[in-house]
Image (cartoon, rainbow over all chains, first blue to last red; front, side):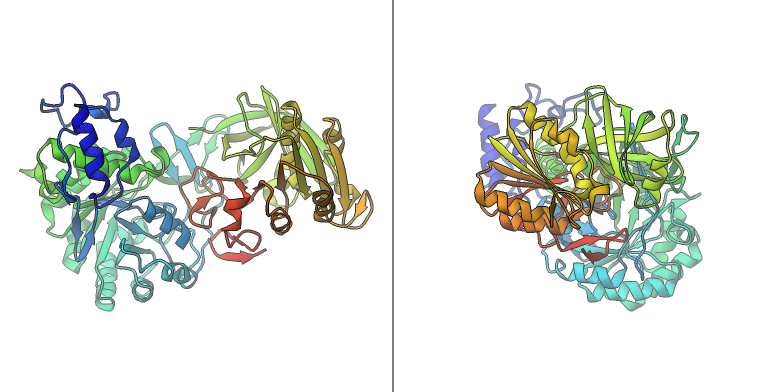
Length: 365
Length: 259
C-alpha cells in the first residue's frame, strides 16, 4: 500500500496536466481498495473510500489518465471551469484562479455601461448553500476590456460572459469581447434577479433565438448559452438555443429563492429575492443536464452545486463535457479545482477509465 | 460558517463629533483587526472593524458619513441589527515594542490591538492623527493601557500640528521598533510603508465589500488578494508588490478610482 501511495505522488508530480494537490499525500490507501466501490455516497463516508489510488497515474511523464476535454473548438486541460461572477472582476483575480488550476475561466457578466448592482445585503450564507442577489455589478465593457487584455493571452481559455436587454446590446458586447481576446462567449440569459436582463429575456424562446443568431452572425468564436432552471422546460429552451446556432449549453444558473429573517420580519437580501447556489441545487442541475442531453447534440457545461469529483462525475455522466464551479470556491477553499482534478484522476485509475470524455453521458445507456 | 445573527444593541455612546460606538452581545474570540458585516435592516449592510473586544460583548465604532452610518447612529439600545462574522485576518502582535499609527477612524480598530499588545507584555507607542480636536477619540482609552501616546491634528487644535506620519517619521529616526502597525487613510499608510523599508509592517485596508466571504471579487487587490479574506490586514512585503495600494480603490461597479 505504501508503495502505491509514494509512486502516485512521484509520478503525478511531473506529469499531470495540472499541478497535483499536496493534499493527495495524506490520502491513505483504503484497505478495501480492491473492491468495486459504490459510486453514490454521502458526505459522512470518507472520500478515500471512492477515490483510492492503487496504480500510478503516469508512466515516465506520460499521463495514464486524461482529464482533457473539449467544448466546441475549445481545448481544456481539465473540466473544472470557474463559473461567472466568482472572483472574476479584474485581471489579478482571474490570474489567481488560473494559477489555482482551473481549466477555463468565465468572466463576470459584463454589460455596456458600469452597473453598481444592488445594495447590501447581497449575499446570505445558508445551511446548504448561498443565496445571492448581487445585481450584475460590473465596470462596463470598456473598463473591463482593459482588465481582459492583460489576461486573454493566457493558455487557460477565458470565456466572456455578457448580459444585455436586447439582441443589439448582446451583439455589441460580443464583438468587443472577441476584440479583447476571449476564446468564447457565454450569454447570460438566466440571471434570476436582474430586472430587464437575464432570465426575464432568457425565458422568451423567440427573443433568446434572436440574441443567439445576432451574436453568432457577428463573432467567429463559439457562443455558449447559460440557461435557468426557473422555467417550465429548460429542455425546450436548450433545443431553441441549439436551433438558433448556439455552440454549447451551460446549465444551470442559480435557483430563484428567498430568505426571510423571522426577528426582523423581512427578506434579508436588499433585492428580496436572489439566486440559490451550492450543494442543495446539485440534484436539480444534474436532472436538467440529463434532460437537455437527451434532446440536444451540442456540448453541455454542467453547473450547480459541484463541490467534489463525485459531483463532477455525476454531471459528466448526465451528459456534461465540463463543469463550472462557484459556491465551492467559498465552501471548499482555494484548492477546490486541484482537489477535484486529483480526485477525478484517482477515481479514473481505480475504475480503469483512461479518458474522462469516455464518461460523458454514460448514465443514458 | 458565520451565519447572520440578529442582535439587540446594548449600549450606544458618542465618542467625539459624529463618532459613535455601538456595543452588543456576541460571544467568541476575535482578533484585533477582524471585522463584522453589520446589517441595518431596510438600509444597508456594511463592513465594520471591531473596536471593543470582550469575551461576551463586542463593539463597533464609526463616523457618520453615509446613509448606512447615519442610520446606524440613530439606533438606540434594544434596537435590532444583523451581525455576521468575524471575518478576515487581523493583526499579528509580536516583538518587544510596536509602533501603532492611526489616522481618523482608523484608530477605532487599533485601540483593541494596543490593548491586546499591552496584555501580551509588548511595549506600545501610539500615534493618533486627526483633523482637529473635535474628532479626537479613544485617546484616553489608549493612554490607560500604559502606551506612550502622541497626538497630531491637521490644524494644531490639539497636540502637534501636522500629520501622524510627521510624528511617526521622527519616532522611527530616534527609536527602534519591532514592527509598525497602522490603520487610516490609505495614502497615509502608503507613506508610512515607504518610511518602514526594513521594519516589519502591517496595514489594515478598507475596500468596498459585498459578500465579505471571499467569493464575489469586489474587494480584490493585486493578484486576486481578497481584502475580506486574506486581509484586511496585509504585511508590508505583500503591499510593496500591490500597485493599487495607496493609489486606487474600486467603486461598487468595480471601476478603478484614484484615492
